Length: 491
Image (tube, rainbow, N blue to C red; front, side):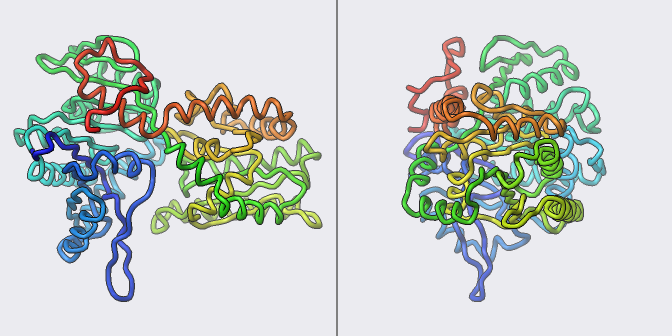
């Protein structure tokens, strides 16, 4: 423990930095994203710690000096967990991404239940626990993130660590009938019960988890209602809560209003005149429903000819896991569909789909958000999905329509303003595209105002404050689902 008191120790699969190899050697670049945005102010200059893999195999010793420089620049300590190529293959690509990722997204036919993956996953979780144990003070709060590290608290308890440990799952938790297909199902639930606080994105995810607890450990009592409930396991109490993650609304809104973004959006609009732009932005992944989205868009063009020449779908696909064969096949399928649809409908001066396979810098991303009259966010299943929240934050004129999958975690928060769809329902999504195209300006504004208010109210800082409040509050009966006045344990 430092003189500043208890520290926050954040633990995730990756450190909040990028290692970039240039001609003169390795360089460290700061990471981006909501989690870094939220945790950095809490960690900075308070003795905070972030523990994770650097993103490479066996480079930690070479890069210790660079990581030290990055720690000094960030204002909190970065502690790397060194992983070998074999560990990365079994723990990350294997168990995490060939078993947990598809299973928890209700795509169990894509799972590869190799026992070797499980044992490698346990070894790496133990390795993380060893680094954590050697770093913490007796009063530090340990906050572990996501499905890569289910078993971290289990190993920490074996090592005698008595600190409070929280866990947040960023992806969905599957229903019981899907979760039971996991060969190591009871071991995973038992490991999660070693945390003091377990957080989920939605009420649905927490309900699924509690169903699994009752199935495998019926002796554990469930007490309470509302955002936080208690599990009574002998002398231990485990809190289980709902904490929908969000974005830095104020930052997105301010940056979207900048002259640079406005000029870029205007330039893009000049290239797509006299039509409504429909926008899709997704990481390359089979859970995002991109082929299904294209089939629905083609159905809309066939069933509603008045859409032709009057709408253009701009689809940005951000490269991901290009070394994995399944992802290369998905990219090929997407590009074949783009070619087929453009070949069927393109006319003089109009192309129905503008397809970009690239990462966007922040200025260009926000410009596309400002450009689009309709956002098409249709994952087959998603823990939350922050693209839809970013789109709303950047919709300064209030003229945008959000078409959102009912299977995205964000649907629970944005249902009052979004047009909700079943991404598997080709005709239903095509109908939503047409109705959104025809929606009058007053209804667009009414819907968008509701969504922007919700996202502004429950931003990324609300998320971290409510999680930490749940971790340390003595009176959970007084815990409110929305507590904007809470300043945060570490502030």
